[in-house]
Amino acid sequence: MTLVSFFGLALPGYALVRRLNPESDWNRGGSVSTSPIQILDLVIVGLYVVLFSFGWKSMGDKIANPEVLEMSAGAVLGASFAMVFLASLVPAVLFWRVNLVEFFGLRWEKWKSVFWIMPAFVFGMMVLGALLVALGWQSWVTETYGSKPQAAVTLIRETTDMGLLVALAFSAVIVAPIAEEVMFRGYLYPVVKRYSDRWFAALFTGVLFGVIHYNFMSLPMLAFMGVVLVVLYEVTGSLWVTIGCHAAFNATSMGVMMLGRLYELPPAP
Image 1 (cartoon, one colour):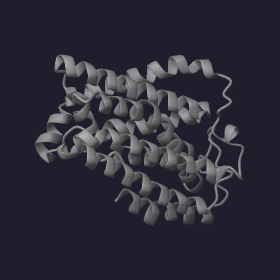
Image 2: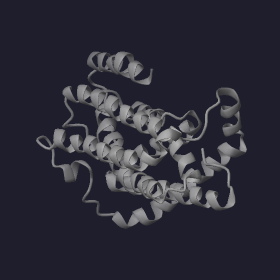
Image 3: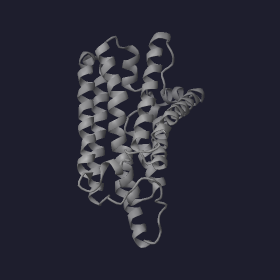
Image 4: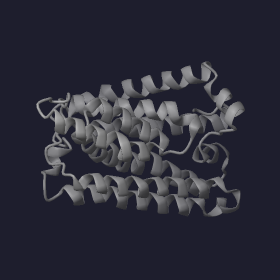
């Protein structure tokens, strides 16, 4: 529904209004450039998101099935390599148009700032998670919709397969932050921003980031996280910051879940 609303209604509506009022800058400021984005990128983004969504859903279905628990380590690694392949399509598409180092802000002069940005980001997300638990979000979702924590979360807390734990940790802390940041903040966000404005693009890509993980219980946390990562990307102009924050958050979540295995802590949303 999110994708249909965006590609079928919201984005064409923005494009039409902007065509009728070309003098407006549409609040397209910030550090993230949209100048190299072309109309073909809309098609590529649509196909990309569909493939990315299918990959997440497929992996979730596999690891959620107890019958394939012994195969899930291989399934997770396979999905990780597929995610890397999909992420590699972004630089392949942009390579002929831009200097990728400059476009993604990889030559970031204030790189030392990441050492306080990452812990601040993780602390903020942990506070949000605790607030959601305190407000009864998890209980309400479970009672109303029967939703459960993500399958990967359940596996991390319950499996005795060390190979599976290593595969999940590798995917969560290394692969996912790089692949998802290249996709969502590095490519999808500039494309949406090019044809709408930065606030719509931030909200849309943030919500989509939450929706695409296919877990209603985690949706508020992940959607808010997606929007904050966009803000950080706009402020710093460097994808290193969002990758670092994403990796730090996932690593912290993995640590909390591992502690949960030992002390029976409640699962994070």
